[in-house]
Image (cartoon, rainbow, N blue to C red):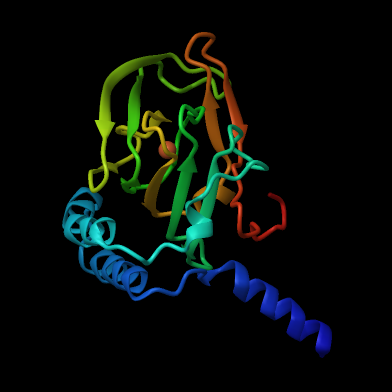
Length: 218
Ligand SMILES: [Fe+2]
């Protein structure tokens, strides 16, 4: 019975509100409500804009340790990925991504709709469009669709397959912190890295810096 209790406690620590702040609860509540009310994904994401903008504009809800780089990162480059909220059924997550100054993510996908915005620092985002038919899982032909600079309070939306493949680089002297609201358990889903030059596609899981995936792998 004691063992069961400890196991249960561990699971609770990895899911739900890992950071229990009213600002985070408000956004998750709004997301739940709008997901139930609006069947069309594009319309739902559009309706979520004000709630997401409000979180980005609020201060003092992100613990200091979840705004710092992680040298043991599964993403490499000292990139920290910190779960703030995770639905136990894998239908929604909120996390902070911390990229040191000058570092960049690999080119990657997300495989879920959502909103991504910069909270601190400045990022350059490069978005790719895929020009092959996707029939070969190990290869992709990518073209740059657009590049943009994203500053604190600014955000963009993901509506896969549209705009789902990108990389971001921190161009500020301080680490960038971006906030991600996505309709999966992003760090525990098998996603893809892309090498734009060779076209090679590699499956990967980034893992969270502060929480385990359900099957205990990173
Ligand atoms: Fe991303």
